[in-house]
Image (cartoon, rainbow, N blue to C red):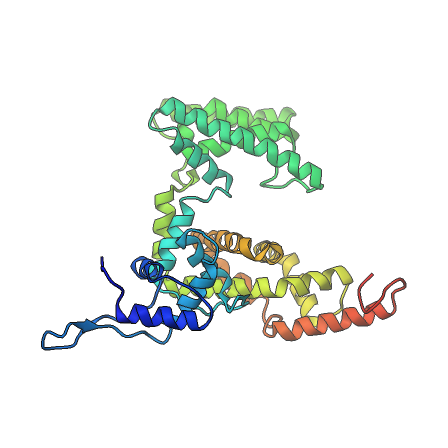
Length: 384
C-alpha cells in the first residue's frame, strides 16, 4: 500500500514516541506497518464523503517503542523483530519473559528470513554453498564438498584446543572429520550421488575402532547389500536420511501454531533467565533442593541438558547478539518434529524447580555470600 502523507494515527504514534524520547520518522512507522510488525486497527469511514480514520490499538505503542529501541542502530527490520520477539527489548532493558505483543505475520516473516541466512548448522552451510554454485551439478558438488571438508576438520581442531571430548557431532580424528564431511554432503545432496563404495569408505574412516576382522566383515556385508540394491535399480538409502531443504524447513515452521511458538519462546526465555544463577550454583557447589533436582534431570535427560547448556551460552552473549543464539535454539526446537514432540516433557520434568526463578537466584546468591565468609582470601562478599 502507498500513502503520500502520514495518517492521523501515524502522526499520533510518532508524537507519543517523541514524548518518550524516541525520535522515529513516520516513514519508518510506515515501513513497520507494511511489514506487519505493528498491531493496527482497520480504517473505518467517517461517512458523507469525509474520508476515513484509524485509531491506535492499546498495544501499538508498546510494540512501536520496542521496535524503536531495537532499530536505534541501523539493522534489518527482520533482525529487529527477532530481537524484540526473543529477548523482549523494552524500556532499553532485556526482559526475561518477553511480553511485547508482536503480530504473528511479522514474526513468521522474520523467522523465514533468518532461516534463509542461517549457516550455524553444518548441513545448512553446505546447502548454502551448493546453492551458490548455480545449476551445474559438478560445481554444486565441488562447492558442497569444499564447504564440508573445511568445516569438519576445523571443528576437530577447535574441539581439540578446548579439550572438548569427541562425540556424535565432534570428530575423533581428522580421518573421522573426512568421513563426516562425506556423510554431510551426501545428506544434503543425496546419498545416491555418491554410490555404495564411497559411503562405505566414509563409514570406515569414521569408525577406526572397527579396523579388525569383525569390522572388515561388517563393511563387506554393508557394501555388498548396498551394491546389490543399486544393481536392482533400487535406492539403498532411506529418504529420511536427506537433509530437509530450506523450503521444507520453512513449511514445517508454518505448520507450528503461533501460540506454540510463543509458548516455547517463553520457556526458553525462562531457562536463559535462570542460567546465570544455576551456573553460579554449580561452580560454588551450592546445596539447594531445586538445584539438586535440576542437576539430576540433566544427568538423566540429554535433551534437557542440551537446552540448559545452550540457554546458559545465550545468557553470556552481549545483548546485541543474544537474539541470534535464541533464534537458532527456537528454530532448532520448532522445525524438528521429533524435538517439538518431546519438548514439553523435556522441560516440564524440571518442575517445580524453576517456578520461582527470582527467588531461586536470591537463595543461591545468599548461600554463595555465606560461603565466601568462610573462604580465605575473599573480600567484600565475593567468591574466591
